[in-house]
Image (cartoon, rainbow, N blue to C red; front, side, top):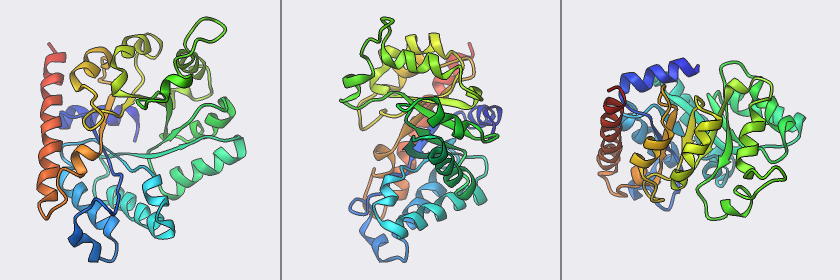
Length: 275
């Protein structure tokens, strides 16, 4: 999916919601545990119930790798199901990969060619030769960690570098000079809303993947106030708040209700942004 196609879907659905498919077998409805593939059956139900009110799904690969080969097969089935049934959905492999060139190339092939995700999250700590192999893939997107929402983010990301600039700003500035940097998106945590103004000075038009709205306490209104670009430029992720809205037989209805609530808030924000 190209960036222009993603923007088109946001306008059509009046939504920039991304739903995180972070499946924990201890949290899903008990009646699904008797099925052949509980993870896939859970995902399929969530996807069928919410695909019209979101523009993206983001499986965190750790939640699949934890279950070995069966978990990986569930991930494969999930992405195939999305691609075959809802090709208008932007898919994100939340894998946070990042290694030397040859290794990154293999990671990129795994997620872009074998699994056929539209994008993958990467960590930039090892520099451009760990990220550029992902950027080589046409119409695929690399979502680089910039400023995350976890408590430990302040250990490194906001420290001043030799030029007196916070490290996350140096990362953003530097990445703009990498080959095929137009394929870059960035992860910025919703709990860091006050930083969005500074981030937009550096990457005014890039898409930002924003986790932390909902269960982590981030404010949708604040993120949009400071982070929205003229082409929206935001993918707001919610995982637990939607997929675990209920662990009973009504989990599908409750998940849709929570997703629809966020979509309606986004519709209002988009309407105001046009004025």
